[in-house]
Image 1 (cartoon, rainbow, N blue to C red):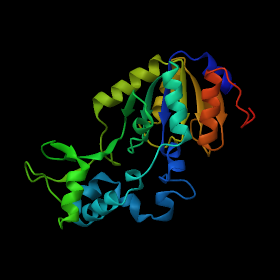
Image 2 (tube, rainbow, N blue to C red):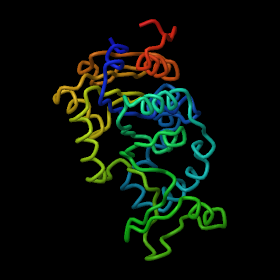
Image 3 (cartoon, helix red, strand yellow):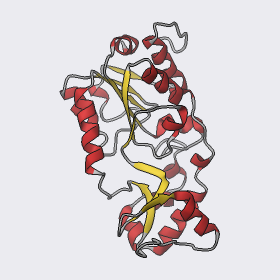
Length: 253
């Protein structure tokens, strides 16, 4: 069923989560080897109010940013498969919850970063936005919690933390995209975080067929026309080959 849906798609949108990047060496959050599973303290660094209230949390967050594996990560077969679908005209947009920009590094041209990017820093006061490297250079030079050069406000990565509102314009673009697609391909997301997870129900209610690819069950499996388990580095290339009308032996659907 999944291969047939991809082969017939004309306006596909992909919704991707952390599971797409695990094969690039970037851990997910909730999986068996997830970041929060191994280190519950890491979850506190992802909570917006904790970040705003605690200098200690901010200092730990800056250290974590400098050590983030995304700085040296390379796209994997799953990222490249989505680029292939885009180049063939099947995939119109990637809506990603990921902050690592590996979709763009793989060559994707139409990517909507729902949760922002770790490669920029933004002031929570005046909104000044600069490259993350500039802030990390200040950390390396001895500033444990660098402030905004313009107004002295709190600096933060340009990502969406828990308890922090999404950019309304970005969310609206995502909603418009899923409402107009004929197939929504969900890859590597546990679909436990709103409002991103709600895009699946929105797409289904608008008539899209949903293909759900994730290592473990999600709350939205019942919305899917096809549910696929397995490594995304195998699953997505197989779907991309279906769009090209090619044979791809594993996995046997």
